[in-house]
Image (cartoon, rainbow over all chains, first blue to last red; front, side, top):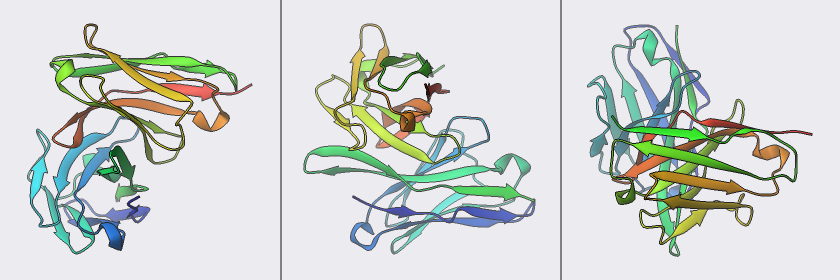
Length: 115
Length: 117
């Protein structure tokens, strides 16, 4: 199964930009991933899909401040002009079909603190 | 408005059973595959089950296979998750989510399952 690795925490000041990283294991480095935002006490919200070539599918209503990109096995979510409302856990995930079996794998999540 | 509303959670003793429901509105339920995802207290997200729109195929994470059963009633716009022989480590918030274009694009608010004696 694919393995997705995320740093457990990140922080930045309001108005700054920050890159959140999701690293795929080498065997699955070509996979598409999704980013989800989960504010404290809330359910996750879909942000976007990021493909290996950097192309994106964004969720409805996601602001332009949220930018996705890709490099090798790494998938990025860049948040620009950080706002206090961006403080949340950010999860990456991928879906796969292996031997006819569908499954999803989530990374451990990154807790973003807006200082 | 698209909505997913989970119910059926609560306190259950180890070895017991419960059935979670996810009632949806605002879209053609039978046209979408659905997922169940859980989150233990203070932990990350864990996918546990998926079902196709026509109930033709069901899928499970290895950690729950044999104890969990997913189903749906498209005439009632409702998704179900039957949990048998519950264990303490099944304690979690359980979310249902709609799958669209390969992503979980809409999530419910969750229902909390607590397993304790």
